[in-house]
Length: 70
Image: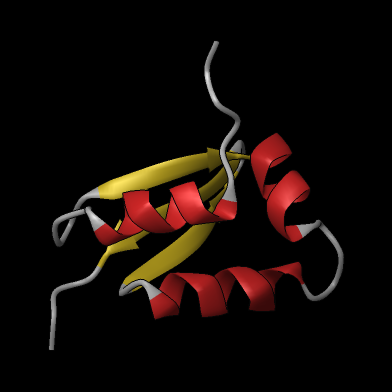
């Protein structure tokens, strides 16, 4: 059985990305973890920035991309 994605697991996955590498989260996972209300984008942005990533909404969810270290 596959473990459902959790915030700690997502944190680990984002932390292990190399610059330029991406990770896609399906809309259903985004809704479950962050919600889809008017503040969800802010939550996702803060989460992404806290792990050295940028994010963009796509037709099927959210794409995280690791940024180069400064």
